[in-house]
Image (cartoon, rainbow, N blue to C red; front, top):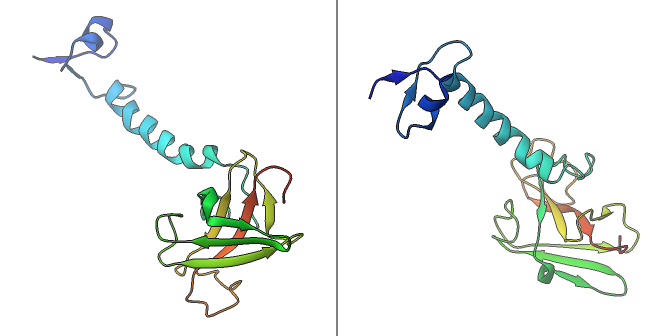
Length: 143
């Protein structure tokens, strides 16, 4: 089958047809749309993460069973697979009223894990080469 003009409606509906690449043609638009969707997707999904916690790059939903609530606060234990940046078991305690407890905007638990590769990893209480849980997003009014 020959190359068809993208402006021809019939040509666009033919399965397997290829459109002529030219300024403003459909082949030039497809990569741009894919790139825009790729870049916008994660940011739009959880744009409510606080910039001072992790700038939407280190936060992710975590399973509810990784959080234990006590009278003193919240203990979070993440294993690899519970958070995309947890490469080893991580545990953190957040007392009630801690500045790193945040309200969850979607009703689920979320944690911010600062990876050991982060050059700004100076917050950690231990060696700078270790990853750690910086913030915990709490569902409901529990923050």
